Structure formats: structure tokens, C-alpha cells
Image (tube, rainbow over all chains, first blue to last red; front, side, top):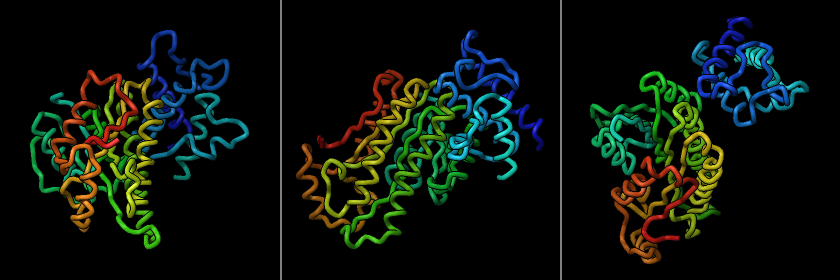
Length: 98
Length: 233
């Protein structure tokens, strides 16, 4: 498992999550896609659902159960949920420790 | 709902076993779990031995349902342990055991099941509480407190899960002749029955009837509710 593989899994999860959404709500399957703030298409409910899909995808790919929205994530100066890339980076850290 | 998929916790004996047999016979594909293996065999039934408060084991079981069935339509959170004792004599290990199974186990199953249910934007979760909560029964402080927590979980998760098409309700049985009542003096049971509006012991069919109501597709406007049996309020 390397960072590129984790990012690929996160992007796959975004594509899978898009299947639940109407056309205008779909997220761009791109590492730079924003997940938080005004530039994001996601509301808090959408972000929760996306995180669930990403956790499941990582479990499926790497057979490791991680909790992305843990206390550490919430206390970071820069939220790991800013973009798909930052989410994948944080997931890689957790998977490496697991 | 034949061919729908149901997960029942505490399915090896007592009420859970009656639920597993009933819904498997009706054509549901039922996955049951409990700490030990089951001697119930049916084409529609599969048993998974696990502790409901073991996060890894619960995640593995739900993943196996996702891979094997591709969906989960209903969760019946029946697993529970009781501890009847004067509060001043209750060992802390008993407190932890009750909270782990009744509160942590119920939460964990709700969380993992809802994650799978939300894929289909449909799910029915039924939790178990007890009339010991509204009756504030002496000698059941920890058991009743754990079930009060289950009622709160039910009401709050109802709000959090509603937009995903998932309803979550709870049923609160009266005394029923199961292992949980072993060791409770008959006169105490009798006094309890006298406090109910309908003065008889409950039977599995009473619980199944309430669960049937919550499970109905038409019950999509019913969530966060607690139904006590026997006319208790």
C-alpha cells in the first residue's frame, strides 16, 4: 500500500458516492475537489455519507478498518476533509499506523 | 417482505430465537448473531458467533452481509443482558458488562447496519428497551439505565437517519418467560404484572406483532418511537 493507491481508492469512492447523487450534485472525481467550505458541493450530511463510502472502500481494498472522523482529525489545524487529496493523505497516515 | 435481509442480535435463544425462526419461515433471509453458535438450522438462516460490543467482529459481520447479500433491510437489536441487584451491592464489572452489551452493542450495530442500509435509502431498525424504564424498578438501576440510553439513542438516531430512508424505533416488552427472568422471585413478577394495564405475562407473539408494525414499508412515517407492551406508559 502506498499513497497513490490510497488516493486512487479515495477517488474510486468519490465516483461511487456520485452514483447516489443527482447530476448537478455530483463531485468532480479529482484530487483537488473541495469537500469543505463554500467551494464544496457537499453539506454536512453529504460529507458524512462520503466519509462512510471512503472508509468502506479503504476497508475493501486494504482490509483495514479506520475511522476518518476521529478526535485527531477534528483537532488538526488544517482539516483533513478539505479536499479529496487531503482526505487521502490523512487516510494513508491512519492506514500506515493500523 | 420475502427475500429481504434481516439481522437479529442475540438470536441463539429466547425472544431472539423466536424472531429468527419466525422471519426465516416467512421468507426473510436472516442473519443471526450471539456469543455462541446456534443449533437452529434453516435454508434462510445463517448464524455468526460474536460479541456485539466487539467493533472489529461487528464490522466483519456487516461486511460479510454486504458482500454476500448486497443489502440489509432490517436490524433487530435484541441482544441484551440484565443485572438485578441492589445498587449498593452491584459490582462494577456487572455495570460494565451491561453497558457494553446493551448500550455499546446497540450503538455499534445501529451504526454499522445504517451504513449498509443507506446505500438503498431504506432500512428498519428496531431496538429493545424494557418497562423497567418507565416503572423505575428497584433492583434494576443499571439495566434500566442502559435501556434508557437505548431509548435516547433511538430518538436521536431517528433524526440523524431519517434523510437516509431509515426508521428506528424501540419496543419495550413486559416480563416474558426467558433466561433474563431466571432468578427473579415469582412474587416480584406478580407485582409487576399488577402494575400493567393488561395483567399477563408477555409472549413472543406480542413482540413480533409490534416489530411487524415497525417493519412495514407503510411505516415510513413512524420513527423515534417507543412502544411499551401490556399498556405500560
